[in-house]
Amino acid sequence: QQKVQQSPESLIVPEGGMASLNCTSSDRNVDYFWWYRQHSGKSPKMLMSIFSNGEKEEGRFTVHLNKASLHTSLHIRDSQPSDSALYLCAAARSNTNKVVFGTGTRLQVLP
Amino acid sequence: EAAVTQSPRNKVAVTGGKVTLSCNQTNNHNNMYWYRQDTGHGLRLIHYSYGAGSTEKGDIPDGYKASRPSQENFSLILELATPSQTSVYFCASGDVGGRHEQYFGPGTRLTVL
Image (tube, rainbow over the protein chains, first blue to last red):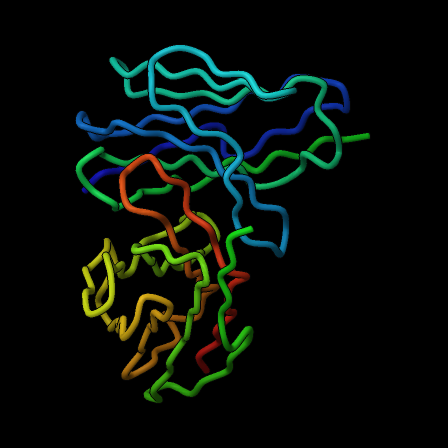
């Protein structure tokens, strides 16, 4: 059964700091990765997706993907208190609609 | 914006009772999913569907059934609820093809006493 491992489990950064989150899939055939963000008491919402090796930047958020190591990372620069949330990594194969989620990294940004 | 609704939002059930959680989407997405979320476990896939009339087992299907009577509706059924099924349940929809994101409903908090 495919697993998605995330680290760290929790992370505290000061306002304005950089947060770095990691995610690795155990499935050698995984093709797609997403990062979802879930604020407390709310439902998950897709933050960024990455399907090819390399880097993708959207505003303060940057994702990296290394398909050879099945590893993706999310970096948040100039972190804001509103970034405090549970960040979920998800992965899927191209030939299936089944998506597997990790257990998440809980980020707290302190003012 | 894609819309997924769930009902009820909160439910208290008794052990051994039958519970039905409902999900409706207006996105015209073929795929729908049921997850449960527990602290320390992230989102775990219970059942999913590729379209009306189809259901597939996810990673933790035991104790749950699913029904997809139409494109818009996907239900999760607990025939004999147990306290271990106390959790927050999320429904999601997504378009075909692995690249598409999932859109989640607001969640249902289920407590089985």
